[in-house]
Every structure is written in C-alpha cells, then in structure tokens.
Length: 270
Image 1 (cartoon, rainbow, N blue to C red):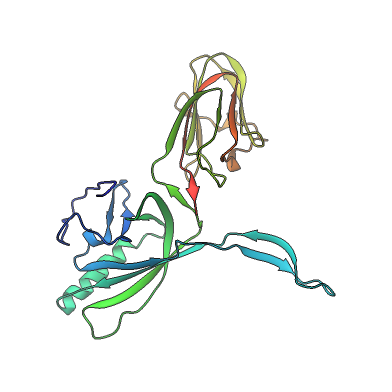
Image 2: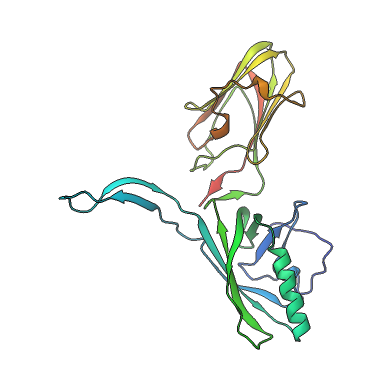
C-alpha cells in the first residue's frame, strides 16, 4: 500500500502498521530516514492538513491619481503556511506532559524537511511558527500547529538522474525554474575552459583540463566546485551565473567542449 518503507529504532505503537491517516506527516531525520508522527507518539493522530492547495500571488500595485483601478508593478508567491490539525490521547496527566514533550522535540528544528502520506514523492522545508493551545483540563485533546515554509515550493525527495553527452533537452515537467543538485562532467579532451549553458545562463571555469578529468558542481545549501575530488573555487569565471543557475522544461543544457555529463535535479512544484 505504501510507496516507500522507512525504518527506525522506535517501536510502532499505533497498532496495524498498514494503516495511516491519508494526511499523516512524515518528519525527515538527519540520517535521511523518515517516519510519521503516528509511529513516534502513541495516541497521536493527524486529522486534517490545509495549506497545500492553490497558492495565489501577492500583487504589488500602485494607485495613480485620475486613473481607475491600480497600475500593476509585480506579483510574487508568498511563503506557504501549512496547518496540521491533530488529536492526542493520554491516559493520565504524566503521559499527557510526556507526549507534548515528545512532540516539541520532534518539531524542534528551526528548519526541517517533511512530507505527507498522500504525497510521498515531494517534500517541504519549514519551521513551526504557531500552535493552538489545547482545551484545559482534558487528557484527550484536539489541537493544531502551523508550519511556515519560506519557499512555497515542494521538491522531489529523490533526484532524477540524467546521463548524456554534450547536450540534453528537458521534457520533464519542470514548470518552475529549479536549481540542480549537481552536475558532474568527465572531460573527453584537453581544454583550457569549460562552459555550461541553458541558453540564457552560463557557468564557465578556466584552467588546464586533461581528458578524463572530473568536474563536480554542487548547488543548494552546500555549494562546491571540485576538480578530481578537490575543491577549487578559483576556476570559476567571475561573470558566471553559478549562484542562480536553473533549469526548466523546454531548455537545453549544453556542455562545451564535448564531455560526458551526469545531472541530478529535484524538480519543484506548488
């Protein structure tokens, strides 16, 4: 029934392991594994999740004297707020406190990755920014917390890997410009410069490169440029678009001179 299986040392205490609420939230651990909160807190159950639906633009416009309406200036997507409503059942006050301590611990990271049982291919990154106070004097409570995602986009959990030579036309539904995870280039001939282009943006490195040399460009939170396994930022041409290099559907990625290329990219979606 599940499309992915996750393992951890915690014991599943919710009964039938094949059943989960459709909107159960998985939290990704630092070691890459992920589990639903239902498997980590006995008596916890996701009820509803909102905030993953249509996201409108925030419009910036200005009024002009003597003119009807406003003049459009720009429109951007705001951050996304996802509200998780849950039920938590406890047998006594001590267990009640212990379960909320556990929930606070699971949600403690200032930014964490998470996804939902009904959308297992994509994950969000966010921060718990608000929570409701449960009704006083009850051991069985219904409450909610809000996760603010600075980027409104979700991204594939596992990258799509492309192996090609020299150039590749993107037909995958990358509808929003997405930065790659990495681009690995194996040189086929000696050269003094290597150029990567999507048609409008360019990354250029300069140096003395031999056939068989491997260049690795990594992007995102831990950017790096390596030549044969050694970090070497000095190769990068200062006019390169490295920091904002993206790809999307309909673009062609070109590498010059002829080279073998391995591209890893996790497309994003609203």
